[in-house]
Image 1 (cartoon, helix red, strand yellow):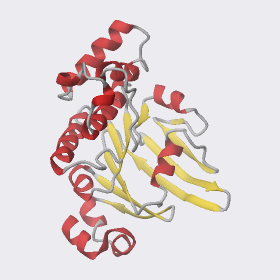
Image 2 (cartoon, helix red, strand yellow):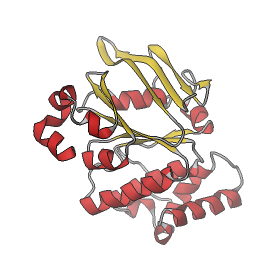
Image 3 (spheres, helix red, strand yellow):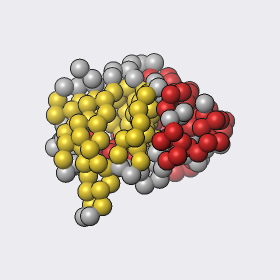
Image 4 (cartoon, one colour):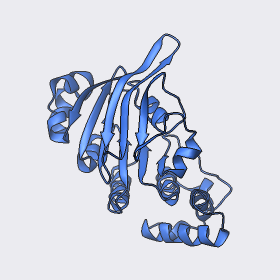
Length: 243
Protein backbone atom coordinates (compact mmCIF):
# COMPACT_ATOMS: atom_id res chain seq x y z
CA UNK A 1 0.00 0.00 0.00
CA UNK A 2 1.35 3.41 -1.00
CA UNK A 3 1.74 6.13 1.61
CA UNK A 4 -0.18 8.58 -0.61
CA UNK A 5 -2.79 7.52 -3.16
CA UNK A 6 -4.50 10.19 -5.24
CA UNK A 7 -7.35 8.68 -7.20
CA UNK A 8 -8.94 10.50 -10.14
CA UNK A 9 -9.25 13.91 -8.48
CA UNK A 10 -10.89 16.74 -10.40
CA UNK A 11 -11.31 20.38 -9.39
CA UNK A 12 -13.54 22.87 -11.20
CA UNK A 13 -13.84 26.60 -10.63
CA UNK A 14 -17.04 27.50 -12.45
CA UNK A 15 -16.46 26.48 -16.06
CA UNK A 16 -12.69 26.13 -15.60
CA UNK A 17 -11.34 22.64 -15.00
CA UNK A 18 -8.11 23.28 -13.07
CA UNK A 19 -7.28 19.61 -12.44
CA UNK A 20 -8.86 16.79 -14.40
CA UNK A 21 -8.90 13.12 -13.36
CA UNK A 22 -5.45 13.20 -11.75
CA UNK A 23 -4.08 10.03 -10.17
CA UNK A 24 -0.68 9.49 -8.57
CA UNK A 25 0.92 7.58 -5.74
CA UNK A 26 3.94 8.03 -3.52
CA UNK A 27 5.73 5.42 -1.42
CA UNK A 28 7.20 5.83 2.06
CA UNK A 29 10.53 7.63 1.87
CA UNK A 30 10.16 8.42 -1.84
CA UNK A 31 10.72 11.81 -3.50
CA UNK A 32 8.22 12.54 -6.27
CA UNK A 33 8.62 15.62 -8.45
CA UNK A 34 5.64 17.39 -10.03
CA UNK A 35 6.38 19.69 -12.97
CA UNK A 36 4.45 21.54 -15.63
CA UNK A 37 3.86 25.02 -17.06
CA UNK A 38 2.47 27.87 -14.98
CA UNK A 39 -1.28 27.37 -14.61
CA UNK A 40 -1.02 23.63 -15.20
CA UNK A 41 -2.83 22.81 -11.95
CA UNK A 42 0.09 21.82 -9.72
CA UNK A 43 -0.75 24.06 -6.76
CA UNK A 44 -4.44 23.22 -7.10
CA UNK A 45 -3.49 19.54 -6.83
CA UNK A 46 -1.42 20.37 -3.73
CA UNK A 47 -4.39 22.20 -2.24
CA UNK A 48 -6.65 19.19 -2.73
CA UNK A 49 -4.13 16.72 -1.32
CA UNK A 50 -3.56 18.88 1.77
CA UNK A 51 -7.23 19.68 2.42
CA UNK A 52 -7.38 23.34 1.41
CA UNK A 53 -9.66 22.46 -1.52
CA UNK A 54 -12.16 19.63 -1.72
CA UNK A 55 -12.13 17.81 -5.06
CA UNK A 56 -15.33 17.80 -7.10
CA UNK A 57 -14.56 14.20 -7.93
CA UNK A 58 -12.05 11.60 -6.79
CA UNK A 59 -10.45 10.70 -3.48
CA UNK A 60 -7.18 11.13 -1.58
CA UNK A 61 -5.84 8.40 0.69
CA UNK A 62 -2.96 8.86 3.12
CA UNK A 63 -1.43 5.99 5.05
CA UNK A 64 -4.47 3.86 4.23
CA UNK A 65 -7.07 6.43 5.37
CA UNK A 66 -9.45 8.41 3.17
CA UNK A 67 -8.57 12.04 3.96
CA UNK A 68 -10.57 13.66 1.14
CA UNK A 69 -13.01 15.44 3.45
CA UNK A 70 -10.61 16.28 6.28
CA UNK A 71 -9.48 19.80 7.18
CA UNK A 72 -5.81 20.81 6.73
CA UNK A 73 -5.17 20.69 10.48
CA UNK A 74 -6.63 17.19 10.71
CA UNK A 75 -4.47 16.07 7.78
CA UNK A 76 -1.40 17.62 9.42
CA UNK A 77 -2.11 15.65 12.60
CA UNK A 78 -2.00 12.48 10.50
CA UNK A 79 1.47 13.33 9.26
CA UNK A 80 0.93 15.11 5.93
CA UNK A 81 2.06 18.74 5.87
CA UNK A 82 2.69 21.30 3.13
CA UNK A 83 4.78 24.41 2.61
CA UNK A 84 3.74 27.44 0.58
CA UNK A 85 5.37 29.07 -2.43
CA UNK A 86 4.87 32.52 -0.88
CA UNK A 87 6.32 32.04 2.58
CA UNK A 88 4.65 33.92 5.42
CA UNK A 89 6.49 33.44 8.71
CA UNK A 90 5.39 35.14 11.90
CA UNK A 91 7.69 38.16 11.36
CA UNK A 92 7.74 39.47 14.93
CA UNK A 93 8.61 36.07 16.40
CA UNK A 94 12.07 34.55 16.48
CA UNK A 95 13.08 31.72 14.17
CA UNK A 96 12.92 29.37 17.17
CA UNK A 97 9.41 30.49 18.08
CA UNK A 98 8.29 30.02 14.48
CA UNK A 99 9.55 26.45 14.48
CA UNK A 100 7.88 25.84 17.84
CA UNK A 101 4.54 26.67 16.18
CA UNK A 102 5.09 23.59 14.01
CA UNK A 103 6.18 21.49 16.99
CA UNK A 104 2.90 22.24 18.78
CA UNK A 105 1.28 19.90 16.24
CA UNK A 106 2.45 17.03 18.48
CA UNK A 107 2.62 18.55 21.95
CA UNK A 108 1.04 21.22 24.13
CA UNK A 109 4.07 21.39 26.40
CA UNK A 110 6.28 24.46 25.90
CA UNK A 111 9.48 22.75 27.06
CA UNK A 112 8.94 19.76 24.77
CA UNK A 113 8.18 22.03 21.80
CA UNK A 114 11.27 24.15 22.49
CA UNK A 115 13.54 21.12 22.89
CA UNK A 116 12.29 19.56 19.65
CA UNK A 117 12.61 22.84 17.76
CA UNK A 118 16.18 23.40 18.95
CA UNK A 119 17.08 19.88 17.82
CA UNK A 120 15.55 20.54 14.40
CA UNK A 121 17.38 23.84 13.96
CA UNK A 122 20.64 22.14 14.91
CA UNK A 123 19.97 19.21 12.55
CA UNK A 124 19.20 21.54 9.64
CA UNK A 125 22.21 23.78 10.29
CA UNK A 126 20.06 26.74 11.36
CA UNK A 127 21.10 26.97 15.00
CA UNK A 128 22.94 30.26 14.42
CA UNK A 129 19.74 32.04 13.41
CA UNK A 130 17.44 30.79 16.18
CA UNK A 131 17.21 34.18 17.96
CA UNK A 132 16.73 36.23 14.78
CA UNK A 133 13.33 37.73 14.09
CA UNK A 134 11.77 35.84 11.20
CA UNK A 135 10.93 39.14 9.52
CA UNK A 136 14.62 40.00 9.25
CA UNK A 137 15.55 36.87 7.30
CA UNK A 138 16.58 36.85 3.65
CA UNK A 139 14.39 35.07 1.09
CA UNK A 140 16.63 32.01 1.39
CA UNK A 141 16.39 32.13 5.18
CA UNK A 142 12.61 32.32 5.03
CA UNK A 143 12.52 29.34 2.67
CA UNK A 144 14.66 27.35 5.10
CA UNK A 145 12.40 28.40 7.98
CA UNK A 146 9.31 27.27 6.05
CA UNK A 147 10.86 23.81 5.65
CA UNK A 148 11.94 23.72 9.31
CA UNK A 149 8.40 24.55 10.46
CA UNK A 150 7.00 21.72 8.34
CA UNK A 151 9.66 19.31 9.64
CA UNK A 152 8.76 20.27 13.22
CA UNK A 153 5.23 18.88 12.81
CA UNK A 154 6.80 15.39 12.83
CA UNK A 155 5.50 14.48 9.36
CA UNK A 156 5.48 11.26 7.39
CA UNK A 157 5.30 13.32 4.20
CA UNK A 158 5.94 16.94 3.17
CA UNK A 159 4.53 18.75 0.13
CA UNK A 160 7.09 21.35 -0.96
CA UNK A 161 5.65 24.08 -3.19
CA UNK A 162 8.52 25.75 -5.11
CA UNK A 163 10.88 25.78 -2.14
CA UNK A 164 13.75 26.99 -4.37
CA UNK A 165 11.93 29.72 -6.31
CA UNK A 166 13.80 33.03 -6.40
CA UNK A 167 17.03 31.67 -4.91
CA UNK A 168 20.59 32.09 -6.17
CA UNK A 169 22.42 28.92 -7.33
CA UNK A 170 24.40 28.56 -4.09
CA UNK A 171 21.23 29.03 -2.03
CA UNK A 172 19.45 26.45 -4.18
CA UNK A 173 22.27 23.97 -3.51
CA UNK A 174 21.86 24.55 0.23
CA UNK A 175 18.11 23.88 0.11
CA UNK A 176 18.67 20.75 -1.99
CA UNK A 177 20.99 19.47 0.75
CA UNK A 178 18.38 20.40 3.37
CA UNK A 179 15.74 18.38 1.52
CA UNK A 180 18.14 15.43 1.23
CA UNK A 181 18.72 15.49 4.98
CA UNK A 182 14.99 15.38 5.61
CA UNK A 183 14.50 12.57 3.09
CA UNK A 184 17.20 10.54 4.82
CA UNK A 185 14.98 10.53 7.90
CA UNK A 186 12.48 8.40 5.96
CA UNK A 187 10.10 11.27 5.18
CA UNK A 188 8.40 11.16 1.78
CA UNK A 189 8.40 14.36 -0.29
CA UNK A 190 6.24 15.66 -3.13
CA UNK A 191 7.96 18.58 -4.86
CA UNK A 192 6.42 21.17 -7.14
CA UNK A 193 9.38 22.88 -8.74
CA UNK A 194 10.33 24.81 -11.90
CA UNK A 195 14.07 24.54 -11.32
CA UNK A 196 14.92 21.40 -13.29
CA UNK A 197 18.28 21.06 -11.54
CA UNK A 198 16.35 20.51 -8.31
CA UNK A 199 14.01 17.93 -9.82
CA UNK A 200 16.78 16.04 -11.59
CA UNK A 201 18.98 15.88 -8.48
CA UNK A 202 16.29 14.97 -5.96
CA UNK A 203 13.33 13.15 -7.54
CA UNK A 204 13.05 9.38 -7.73
CA UNK A 205 10.14 9.84 -10.14
CA UNK A 206 8.46 12.74 -11.94
CA UNK A 207 4.81 13.45 -12.75
CA UNK A 208 4.14 16.03 -15.47
CA UNK A 209 0.88 18.01 -15.53
CA UNK A 210 -0.40 20.09 -18.44
CA UNK A 211 -3.82 21.77 -18.62
CA UNK A 212 -4.73 20.00 -15.38
CA UNK A 213 -4.03 16.51 -16.71
CA UNK A 214 -1.13 14.12 -16.21
CA UNK A 215 0.74 13.73 -19.49
CA UNK A 216 3.77 11.74 -18.34
CA UNK A 217 5.18 9.86 -15.37
CA UNK A 218 8.43 7.99 -14.78
CA UNK A 219 12.07 8.30 -13.76
CA UNK A 220 13.65 11.73 -14.44
CA UNK A 221 15.89 10.77 -17.35
CA UNK A 222 12.98 9.09 -19.10
CA UNK A 223 10.47 11.89 -18.56
CA UNK A 224 12.71 14.73 -19.78
CA UNK A 225 13.13 12.92 -23.10
CA UNK A 226 9.37 12.44 -23.56
CA UNK A 227 8.22 14.37 -26.64
CA UNK A 228 4.92 15.45 -25.04
CA UNK A 229 6.84 16.87 -22.07
CA UNK A 230 9.34 18.67 -24.31
CA UNK A 231 6.55 20.19 -26.40
CA UNK A 232 4.38 21.20 -23.43
CA UNK A 233 6.99 22.39 -20.97
CA UNK A 234 10.71 21.86 -21.35
CA UNK A 235 11.51 22.82 -24.94
CA UNK A 236 14.26 21.08 -26.86
CA UNK A 237 17.16 23.06 -25.41
CA UNK A 238 16.00 22.72 -21.80
CA UNK A 239 15.40 19.00 -22.27
CA UNK A 240 18.93 18.61 -23.60
CA UNK A 241 20.36 20.44 -20.59
CA UNK A 242 18.18 18.49 -18.12
CA UNK A 243 19.04 15.18 -19.73
